[in-house]
Length: 357
Image (cartoon, rainbow, N blue to C red; front, side, top):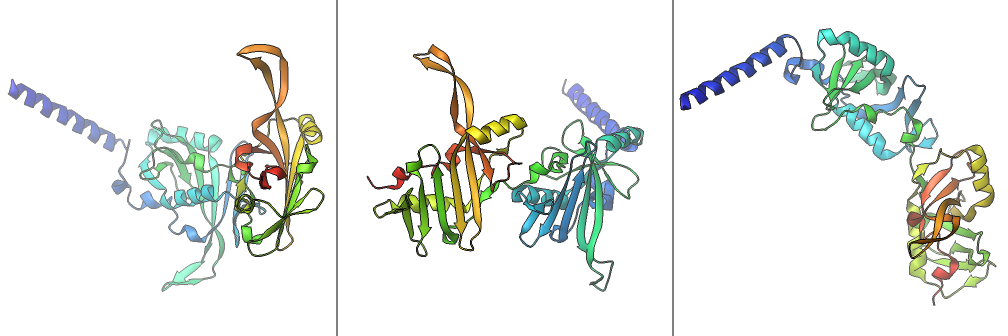
């Protein structure tokens, strides 16, 4: 009985070994050791000198990321979301060929790449040639062009072609579960920084809070010293007895205030209606250099049923959402931001919140 079990185990091992040999001979997979130098051909050894990345798909979406003295920007002007750029650079640094593509499958994969892939161009500050470790004629150069295709069946890699190579490969990142194509998004909005305000407390000169619903709750905060501010009411009368801790805590939050998303669901007519009827607060921050940043808050109206004890007692009502609102930053009406009210809770408090009881 034991001998039969041993024979079965040995037979099973031999069958598995035979299958592996057949797969290897037919080039259905390759280890990174078998691939040799090709395994690292897709990676960029030094991402510090990457200065520009261009991405485009077959649907007309495209984005250009540029590295500047102040950080990465989208389309030359819009600050880029640092976390996304860092992920992209890390991907370029660690991108590895996981396996080859069988010869019989290459025509289909090449066709897919030609119609569905995202084109990625990477530009670096690179020399024309190097002699004895000395670089000559360093300038911006296009160093790699990728075509990032769809995921493999197991979703643990994706097909990709590197310009200059004769065949596609399956690429992945060691230790990363999933495929990397989504990290190469050609949609500009996916790269925008969500930061609206980014002013430290010591850089604030004044902040004006205009309440359109209750004008008497409007107020202004004026810098008087390194960490000392004066509070003025809606008639510009100075208020001496106020809660300094609440004021400092609120002002400190201007070091980073972000939006949730860019709203695209509204039609032009619906946007006009929002701008005309739903404005409820304006915040104008001026820094010590005299640069002004203005954020306008607009209600998001929701249709709700008036209830009492879980019973309908009236017709549906349009009420302002308590969770989200719209925002316009620096009078740029082409971008309607969606904001989380709790995130701006302290900035939306009325004057009476800061006055000592």
